[in-house]
Amino acid sequence: MHQLIYALVEASSEDQALAAAKTTFDGLVGASPTDGAVFDYYVTFDDDSSTVAGKARWGERPVAAPVDSVDGTELVESGWEATVEEFEHNLDRVRDALGELDTEAIMQNKNFVRKACYDLGAYRGPLVFLYEESGTGIRHRDQLDRVLDSDEQVWVVPVDVHTESLSGRKNQLLIRYF
Image (cartoon, rainbow, N blue to C red; front, side, top):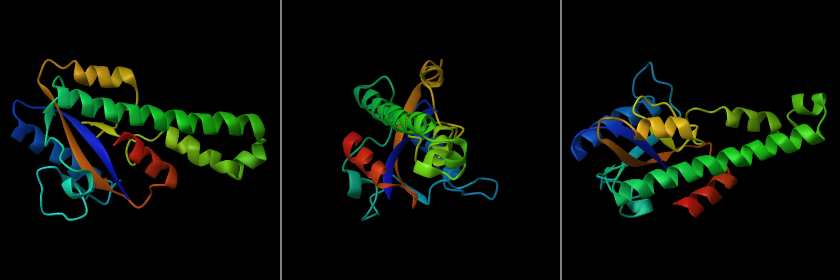
């Protein structure tokens, strides 16, 4: 399945932003032996070669945009809204299960409560939509605000990533937000 994610990087130009973001995305697909892959591959929006990803799937998107521009603000807001929605969905699953299930049922992963707990703690992968330049997922608003409040120019770079682990729920989110 495909989804859009975003890297927030410091750069002085679109080309520098794209280069920095590609380094971030390379880490997320396991381009080096020390990186753990959480996505299969990615396609940036300057790449016209794919017939199934990037522009071919999502239409025109900025290659990179300053976060304080109209496009940049929209991209960051889309990523943040998806992050909050997914977190709230998993938190509701955990709360419901803890109220309904006993210890043994939770240990047996009834209602997939253990999976929901795991998803709440995810810092990389399909449940995370915004990333710092280091490849760390942005999981709370203070973290996002720190990245956005940099003394340097911050750019947001969208990318289409592919993963085999997206659920039907994720497909619904993708249609809603993107």
